[in-house]
Length: 126
Length: 111
Image 1 (cartoon, rainbow over the protein chains, first blue to last red):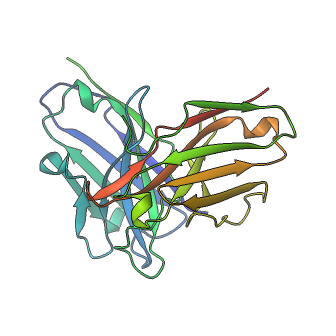
Image 2 (image 1 turned 60 degrees about the horizontal axis):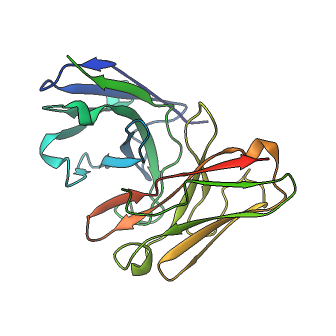
Image 3 (image 1 turned 30 degrees about the vertical axis):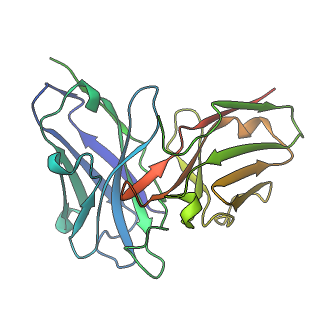
């Protein structure tokens, strides 16, 4: 059974860079048929999609965050990562990683997120 | 303010039927994009409950069902059980925002 586990710094200072990693176990991140995503949830607020990385290595991010987001993959470690630059208090959230089954088209807007990692709280504060 | 609108809370007694609505617009649900539903039990990761508007992943009881019409979607839960107490989120794609969007979540309380 595929499992995802987020890790990284739980406390980041304003204007610095948030860095998180999602370790994939129970399956290979390099197997075709899936893309991989980051999603966050600020305290007391709804879920916000951050971005996807596809099997090709290409990425697609939320336009509202695009200028600050980098998503990358390390196939040798079976993990993918998120970097968010110039963080502010508004970036305080539980950050989760998830897999997106492709079905017939990895770029389809109709794909869903399954499964999800447990999530990790990142607080932006000086 | 989430792009997809859900009621903040719903409740029902054991054995009853409840529905959770998810209201969107012409750039997401109304544009024909699929709606998916997730269940988040306290302290756990969200779990896929319904995909493609009305399909259930294996292992999800048939007490859970989804539907979509126009710019809205609904999740129905029949034969309510105490273990169904959780937060429920809908999700779709929005062409105006060029990305995937979620509802604000609905807390289900089993009385």
